[in-house]
Length: 213
Image (spheres, rainbow, N blue to C red):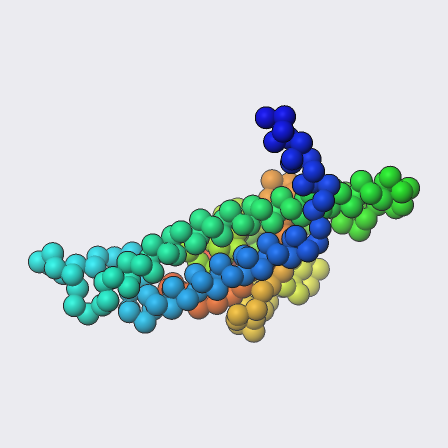
């Protein structure tokens, strides 16, 4: 146990931006693989659920049952990998920021912009995530029901007017990563969300409701 703790302490002190970027590349690779398997299901005309046998219990003749089963299993495994890598990225960012703050304090330099942001009061949210469909782009990005949105791409608390602002950003950002900031548990959380086609409706797979201001 002591040796494990020492190893963790060492990793905390040696975390670099390159380490974080490598984790992000792994995340992007997983997301691309998930998209490819969703495309397989789309080509077969099926989703992640539903029977693959006919009324008599025989394998359906209108789909490649083996290919669909492989795609469904792979999506399930990759989604677990995606959740794990998102946790790694968040922990790595926390360690990186902590190391930068400690270094500046040791050198007597002013606190970093990130540290100042964490200490600053959070702006009031303008919308809330109401529902999320499992396996959707929103789910893969790590959004949670109840997250209160304070930034959605270029939309923020200061310029938000209606949900059409968000809809416009989504429509013009298909396949591109959007920077999202939400309040979760009284803390600001940054996420990357890529609007894209999937087996469900829309490009996000979540429902966002405006908050009264």
